[in-house]
Length: 205
Ligand SMILES: Cc1cc2nc3c(=O)[nH]c(=O)nc-3n(C[C@H](O)[C@H](O)[C@H](O)COP(=O)(O)O)c2cc1C
Image 1 (tube, rainbow, N blue to C red):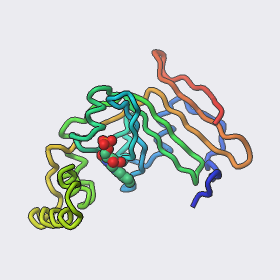
Image 2 (cartoon, helix red, strand yellow; image 1 turned 90 degrees about the vertical axis):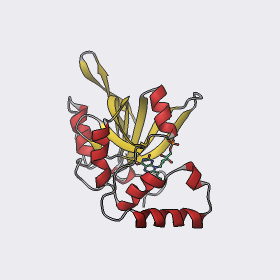
Image 3 (spheres, helix red, strand yellow; image 1 turned 60 degrees about the vertical axis):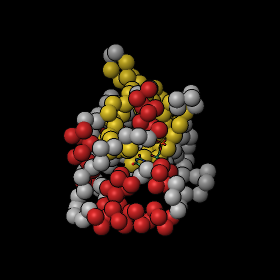
Image 4 (tube, rainbow, N blue to C red; image 1 turned 30 degrees about the vertical axis):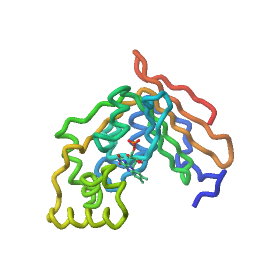
């Protein structure tokens, strides 16, 4: 457990900064086939102008884009339809690392999203079918009965994805790698994408 105000130490003590931040990002993130899916705080521009943020699972980093999966009727889906820009934040306090990725968001094709659904656990596959405001408003016993009934009525693995199953991919334009140090100041490598490619600034933590 991390004590508030402290953090571990970045395993990577090099001052080297690669030209390509996507490669560095890949070295911080699990490979797309790793069953461990990190959480990321995913922030969008709210329809009322106030930012919204929530945790989602990072389904995969494909070497270029960060993918996540969600419900097509969700607030975040409506916000992305209106303003397809977002920031994702991942943190590893024990490794003294934080990754902040800002960029443009595109919907995955239905085929891309459908390919991910069977890789989700049974519980998450069921959730994608049963995650409605209507059911959420019912008492716990009714919610559990609806879940058990749906599960029993759809034996076999995997389920088919519901029509509301949706995937999105964030293409980075700005990437900040924050690294803590137990014996010195924290610092950031901040990469920004311009016409000439990525530029790097070294910033205070
Ligand atoms: C640990 C954890 C993992 C979650 N993973 C996802 C996810 O992968 N996709 C998703 O849509 N929501 C996920 N959620 C739920 C979201 O945080 C959020 O409550 C939900 O998507 C509704 O967000 P919205 O109303 O802003 O669209 C997760 C929540 C937690 C606590």
